[in-house]
Amino acid sequence: MSTSPHQPEPSRPLLVTLTILTVVSGIVDAVSYLGLGHVFTANMTGNVVILGFAAAGAKGFSIAASLTSLGSFLLGAAVAGRVCLNVGSRRRWLIFAMVAEGGFTGAAAVVSALVSGSVGAGWARYTVIAILAFAMGIRNSTIRRLAVPEVTTTVLTLTLTGLAADSSLAGGHNPRVARRTSAVIAMLVGATVGAEIFLHQGATWPLAIVAVAVLATATLFAMQEASRQLDA
Image (cartoon, rainbow, N blue to C red):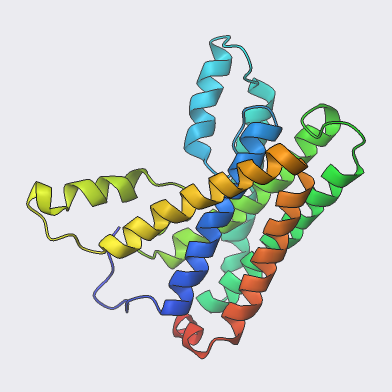
C-alpha cells in the first residue's frame, strides 16, 4: 500500500493513535486465543487457518467459534462500510469507530465479569467472541479507509515483508523503517501484556483496560489540532 501523491504524510497524532490501536490488537487477540478457545477476534488470517485445522479434526479448535468470529467481523466491517458513506470526514469516522470499539470491548468485559465460571465456555464464550470480532470489523474497515502505509493495526505480514524486502541487505533504502518496526513492536508488546494480565487476572481486566485505553485515545486524538488533517 503506497501513499497517493495527493495524500499527505500522516500526522504524528494519527500515527500515535494507530500504534496504540496496534497494541490493543495484541491484547485482544491474546485474550481471545488464550481465553476463548484458540480463536482470534482481530487477526482474521489466523482464523481462516484455524478453521482449516478444525475442519481437519485437529484437537482444541472449533469450527463454530471460528465461524462466529469471522461472521461477526464481516458484519462489523459491512456496517462500518455502510455508515461511513454518510460521514464526510475521515477524522470524524475514526473517532466514531474508536468510541464504538471502546464501547463494544467494554460490553465484552462486562459479560466476562458477570460469568461465574470461565468465559471460555458456553454462551459467554460465543457472546464475547461475537462482540469483539464485530468491534474489530468496524476498526479494520476504518483503517482500510484511512490507508496509512505500513500501519494496518491488526496484521503484520506485509509490514515484515517490507522490512526485509526494502532493507539494505536486499539492496533497498529502508523506507519507513521506523514506522514498520514500531508496528511490530507494538503488536508484540500488546500480545505480551495481554497474555500476562489474562494468565494472572482472567479476561475481564485486560478487556476493561482495552476499553478505557481506546476511549481515552479517541478523546486525545479528537483534541489534537493536527488530527484535523483528516477533515479534508
